[in-house]
Image 1 (tube, rainbow, N blue to C red):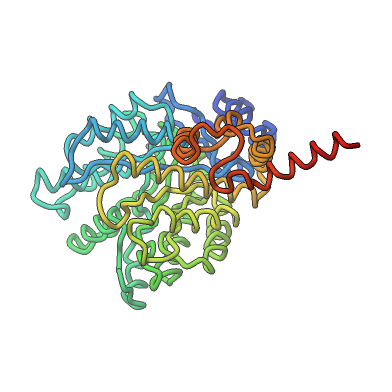
Image 2 (cartoon, rainbow, N blue to C red; image 1 turned 90 degrees about the vertical axis):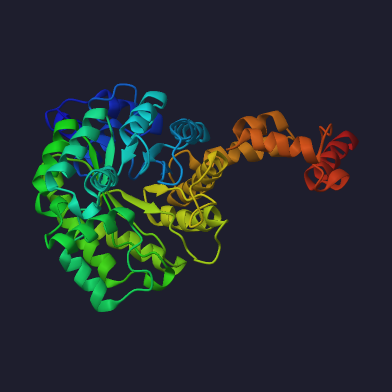
Length: 432
């Protein structure tokens, strides 16, 4: 049995109660939106130590952190450390995107060492194994692809990115329109390369019922991937992108009929003025399924600062109704992220998510800010450090720039506006 099937039979799984408690949402409202497919709780039934995380309105916007090896950097211990760092920084989920080394071993170790939902992209492992064993991704068999999906499900993976909307029809739209950067999705490119060589349609699309069989058996949440997401501002919101989104909407409906939970992945590189429209299109075409966006990245000109670029896009996307932000690190477009990059990427996305939650009037969002403001007015540094998003950084910064000064920071020193007014009010009260 899965979460949705249990709810249909009148049972309330512990995971649903946990989400209701942690988000201060009424059980009945949560149940209703889960049954409508507007909220998901990614949790593989085989995984026992995983935290229950709800994704979708009116819950808080969630943040995912991508980690994983590449063919150029293979270090299992480092990837596990990055996974733990992401969790400690406050990520709600992790995705292992490994393409180098012992991919299965890395995934299993991350599952052991963390307790937040784990996502994967099975085509990565399937394609890399085909390249190793048969000399090329083009020699991947459909059976091998589904075997990898089942292996990862058996390991306890909670949600999977599957590029089911990468079809010849979608590719036709791309060719007819033209793009600056064509495809930037690694999984989408793996599949399209295979399709063009073998002259066969995407097996994840043609055998979607088999995908649903596996997802249903393990209660895996499908993250329907955007293989045709724009990789540059010049390519945003084009026909290929929305053709794929339309297909994903059709597949979402099929998944919901099988009580399979679905989230929809979105762009990618889009300018600020197109974010609202993109969120609205996804909600309309995909029946209100939670929207999972990469950033979005709102300009192409800031490598090294793309965590800031994506935080700008993420805050706006969240404010307009996106439910799930995939972080972007400072090393995006430059190289594989390190531990520090992971921390900074998570923090940037958490800031964006929270800013969006304030705009969406998510219960409790403004209360957090209010508590910080009250502590700030009282010059209660200890309480401020307890409340802020990154206490260690706040403490270290203060120790560096204002050591030993308990009253004010060194920005304004003795001319601190808050201190001056507080002192004036005290003196005025004494003179009454």
